[in-house]
Each structure stands twice: as structure tokens, then as C-alpha cells.
Length: 104
Image 1: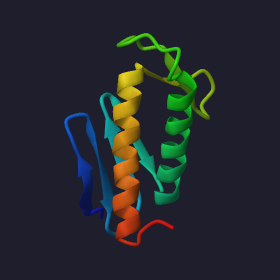
Image 2: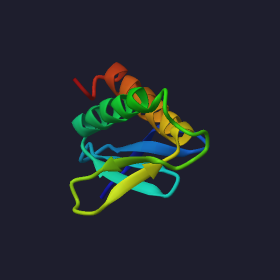
Image 3: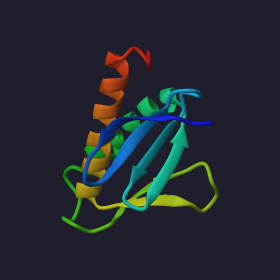
């Protein structure tokens, strides 16, 4: 039975950690992910790379950034500002998990 600890919660979503299986549930807008702690850092790094790649060429408030997933023909779609908020939430969650000694 999962028992969740809130790692971070804001107006866009949350990251919670199961105290038993150590898995994370990540929600942002209409996206919900279930990941292991090490995957959070990989996702945060991926979103940071997309932000850097799109920094000079995005159109404000237009959902034009497509992030591929391992699932065939399935992508995550963000406006630059949304991706910034998502990456910020992931970065803060990773920092909190690191400070608590949960992630290397």
C-alpha cells in the first residue's frame, strides 16, 4: 500500500514519493507520470536541454515544443513557458530529494 510524501506542490502540479516503494508520482497540467527517483533527474536534464535549444526561437504561449517519448507516435507538447514551469518543478523536486538523501 502506497503512502505518499509530498516533495513539491505548486499551482501547476506536484511530485510525491511513496514511502514504501520509493517511486515518484509526477503531475503537471494534464500529464501524469510514475517514475523511479533516478528517472526524475534524467527528465529534469532532458527538459533543461529542450529549454536551451528553444530559448532563442520559441513563440510566446504557443504549444510548439514536442518532447518524444519511448511510446511510438506519442509526444509531450509544451509552450516554452509551460516547459520552464515543468523543468523548475522537477529541478526543485530533485534538489529536495538530494537534500533528503533519496537520490544520488
